[in-house]
Length: 129
Image (cartoon, rainbow, N blue to C red):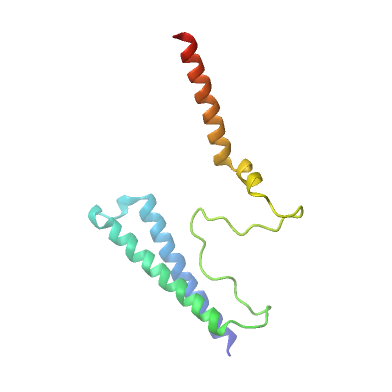
């Protein structure tokens, strides 16, 4: 197998996927880009289908033709969606328990803070009436 041809194909597919991802991001964050707002959802659908097509093509190439030598292996396929978290490194202290994960979650902390504030407000209201 010619690794240069494989890498060229993967690079072009990755570039097209990134282009589609960027267009979706722009449409979602700046809907005024499309003069006819009634077609905004259709535009997003078209670009998301294109993105899925290119990512699928990259996965297919990797599945059937990925080089076995780790030195020649291209980077992992496809762009990460906006807001997606990269894979976490393994913890040196062992697996993280679910209750620990929940307690360290910013969303969990915010909900706890909101509950405390709500209880304080209810207590003040009860005292004044």
